[in-house]
Amino acid sequence: MTAPAALLVIVFHYVPTLGNIIAFQDYNPFVGDNPLESFLNSEWIGFGNFQTLFEDPDFWDSVRNTLSITLFQLIFFFPLPIFLAILLNSVLSPRIRGFVQSVVYLPHFFSWVLVVTFFVQMLGGAGLLATEMRQAGIEPWNIMANPHIFIFVVTSEAIWKDLGWGTIVFLAALSAIDTTLYEAAAADGAGRWRRLWHITLPGLRPVIVLLLILRLGDALSVGFEQYILQREAVGRQAAEVLDTFVYYQAIVPQQWGLGAAAGLFKGAVGLILILVANKAAHKMGEPGVYSRS
Amino acid sequence: MNRRPVWEEKPGLVGLVGKGVVLAFLVLAVLLPLWSVLVTSLASRETINATGGMVFRPREFDPSAYLTIFSGGEISRAVWVSTMISVGGTAVSLTLTVLAAWGLSRPGSLGHRPLLFLFLLTFLIYPGLVPSYLVVTGLGLKDSLWSLILPTAISAFNLVVVRAFFMNVPSELIDSARIDGAGEWRILLRIILPLSKAVVAVVGLFYAVGYWNAYFNSVLYIDTSSKWPIQRVLQTYILGGQSPHVTGNVPINIPGVNAYPPSLAVKMAVVVVTVVPALIVYPFVQRYFTKGVLTGAVKG
Image 1 (cartoon, rainbow over the protein chains, first blue to last red):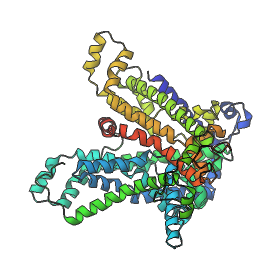
Image 2 (image 1 turned 180 degrees about the vertical axis):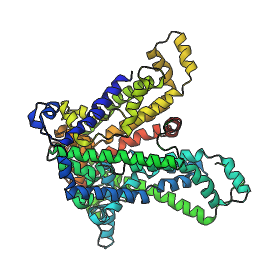
Image 3 (image 1 turned 60 degrees about the horizontal axis):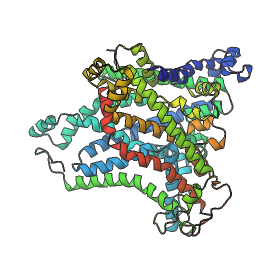
Image 4 (image 1 turned 135 degrees about the horizontal axis):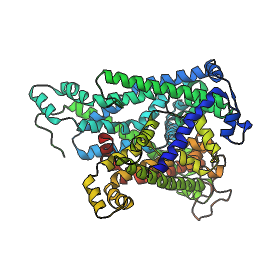
């Protein structure tokens, strides 16, 4: 019964994974009738594609953009769902809490096209903010087309979309904390903040570490559609991330070998990062993503 | 109303107000953009000209933008394409996921461990854009709607969630059915699935939303604009700045309805149409979120 699903995963996941081998070829789609035949007839060039890639300053720009955005979001986005979860957990009225949860989970179900559209229509040059400012006689800003604040804009979009959704896992962890711990601590005279620091945060620690590892493993992917959708408005300098680099430098001009090399670089770095982060988590006594048991 | 535990301090006024302000800000940040888009889609040309763009205060109820986009033409077609992909894709995904999860939930079934590993490893390995593109085109799926379904049909995460849920079904239940002569299919359809409605609903929603929201694969694989899903059309018109060709150049002819609604209203109507499916399905499945996903994830 598992066979049909396994077949799909093999064809659309593992065959392409093996297909990365064309990174070592000057792959030419016209030397065969189908990609397999072209692959067999294409010329092997060793690390030629990697050399071209690593000598391309645009490639390093895209890596730098990607890593800056990852780091920025790690600092300014990652902690927010933890705070919001603790805040929601302290709301006593189930009706208010349920309402807030329903509303803030919602944008998670919107596509990136919609999220970017909402931002453009609210904050863009012809958006709500700009029209209101114009009516008030103030010169409007065009927030959405300014490359200097692009990193704030993409982070705000990511927060708008996924802040609420991100709280779910923390809320579950919070509800698993034994309430007698709080009671005992309160009886011993620990105040609100000490209970937060000594009971709540340690209770959340395994989940925080797990999500941090997963985020590190994904350090080279900051999302794809979000950037491709806004690349035109703010320009390549600010919005080119590794994934869009592959699309514009490989798929569009059909530089297959080069694109596969960039993809392989990304996949290998991601795999190494997640293994290292997981190892570090084990050293710190956390279960991490997987264990060898 | 939950009672505050006796040992907990009463919150101070500052704390309460602070909490209220933060939560109100978050709720408004989500709801106000939706409201403004809805109001603009129903606004008349005069109102839009008066504000010079997006409208926030409703003045009238003018449905002509909606009548225009549903009178045939590109938007209607894109909605239809996206509906077909979402319904068909979800059927394919859900069937295959449930079958695979059932097969993998019984320890001792053929190749149980290596197969599970095969799915789990997809979390760690990223196949890359170029080889995926070559495989899909090599299979002749370029410009076929199947290219928007098959490559993303199986999500290992959803599979793991469903499997974890199936594993919690007491094996006595299955054994007794087997003794009574039920085969594998009958056990799955009559015992397992009825017990797993919650998780199947949640996973089905995830798949459906994923298909409805998919944008980039259509950029990669679909060249013919008549096969574009709604997200692609939305992107072209709103972010790409083109004006929609909504009615195949025939103005609508309904008494009392503006035959040429303002293009901003039409664009916002397209946004509303793209949002609505998520809004409709959401409340039905929302109550299963914690029940379905978290039990699966925590015990997985």
